[in-house]
Image (cartoon, rainbow, N blue to C red; front, top):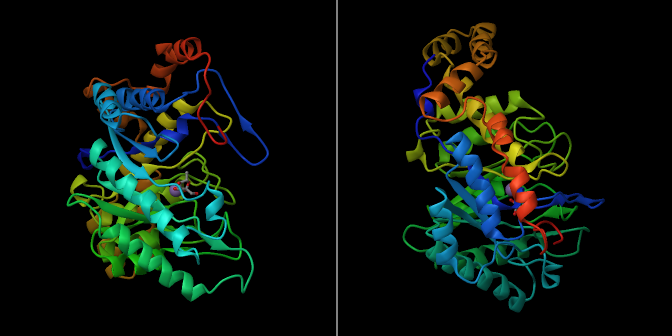
Length: 383
Ligand code: LRH
Ligand code: MN
């Protein structure tokens, strides 16, 4: 089984997955949860130490705000990881009730633009290249505002941010079909995000969050189309049964994750030089957070490993010959292949534990941080 295609493949983990999270009904807490970005990064570094797959940690501003970014950067690098994408936050300020980059009032739009310029400064200090913008703007009632006017204002605001990008920096523009607004979001789908990216320039690319589509959406088709345009910048991987559930990637629909990875392999986008950033965007509301993160990066690697086993030349022949079932069978054969043993062998060959979750449990790390992290305020939603 040749899985050399996994060489150099990495997954970026989100700082907020290590903090408390929940729903509007309840945010659960648990002992040892990080209280600051330093402790979040320390937890994330454990995932990389045990899997060798997660060398970057995404941060969210202001959730992860610190006084000394260079010191936080040094802290991360001392632990063997580095700071990845910087996420802006336009969804926790009263001024943004009617929108941020799309708001009718230029004063509010300017405030939102300035927030992104501040994120660019932070990126220069942390060595990050990716500014991730999820636009939470939207409307709840028809007629509430001009759909077209908001798009025009959005274009102008994004242009002001894009023009301040440093030479090695890029924008990752994330769409979402509903929530926190319910009549329309201002970037509800991949097409709208792509149109804004094309209007901005080549350093604007699309983020595909697997939880941000209408039920039944063929997500791998969108992956193929964005790759065809050279505008797939990143994934926010998670899984869902109904809405933006942010569950462990591959947990709800491992076959969908495999189909997505099949399009990634077909486009060669699993190779580091593609610059597609494979990120997680999840919340572990009830399960242990670190084992949940370890499981998640292993699920992504497993789906990619299966996709790498697709016999591409036999598939091309079957497709050319119109052999419908034959072509499907070739894909299913790869999907049905159990790659777990070979992946454990690969880890062992790299000095990593065959079973990272078991190794984490045996490390005593969870008990140690539960003892150490007493006092202060646990990080997380609503903290
Ligand atoms: C919005 C989103 C976005 C992040 C947030 C934590 O639903 O997917 O990527 O800012 O989750
Ligand atoms: Mn997301």
